[in-house]
Structures are given as C-alpha cells and as structure tokens.
Length: 145
Image (cartoon, rainbow, N blue to C red; front, side, top):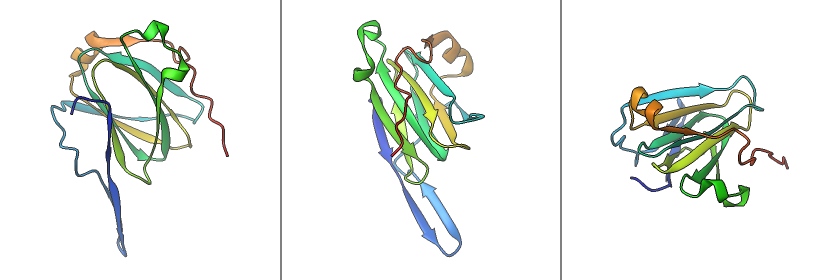
C-alpha cells in the first residue's frame, strides 16, 4: 500500500467487552512504531514530511483530526488543498500517509492516543524528515457543533 488511503476496521462487542480491529492492515515493511499523547487538545503536531518513508496512523483512544498535504508544490498550496481526516477509536481505521506527503494532527478530545507505524528506522526517518511550522497551513481551528 503506497497511496494515500484509509483502511477500515470494526468493533466486535460481547458480554466480555470490545475488540477493535483493522484486519486488512498487514504491517508491510514496518520497522518501528511510537505512541503519542498530548497534554491537552489544543496542541498540534505538524507538519512533518518524508520523501521516502511511509507512515501509518492509528487512533487508539479518542478522536484526532489529520491533515495531509503533498510535498511537491507545497509552497504554492493553501489550506483549501489540504486533505482532512477525522479518525476516531470508536470507528477503527488506519490512515496511510505515503512518501511524498506532509502530515500533522490535532487531538479533538483530552486523552487522545495516536499510534504511528513507520517503514523507516529512527535514523532513516531523521535524515528523510522535512518540516514546516505547525501553522504553515492553519487548518486546526475546529468548529464544534
């Protein structure tokens, strides 16, 4: 899987509890993962890009808003070009962020936990990381209902 995509999962519930799963994710080339929680939901972690590595994001707890922007032509792009995904642990899914994209996320509730899976070692990722300020594309204002 190398295209920007979302793998759908599901939840199975019985009298013992819940099992969340995304059975179509086969961990292709994953060499490491990290788990992120923010101190509060006003924190934004953005914009990181990789020219060679693929990253997969799974929201293990809570809900997060992800923004995805292509690296090529990034200087000319505006907020309107941003692909936005709202991912919740109540509807499990994995967001694939392929090489060639910037990405970032903001927790939409306190206690949100995001797991990131990478096809690059930490050293490879550091050498391949492109960075823009968190508000370079300021999509993070969320209007509550």
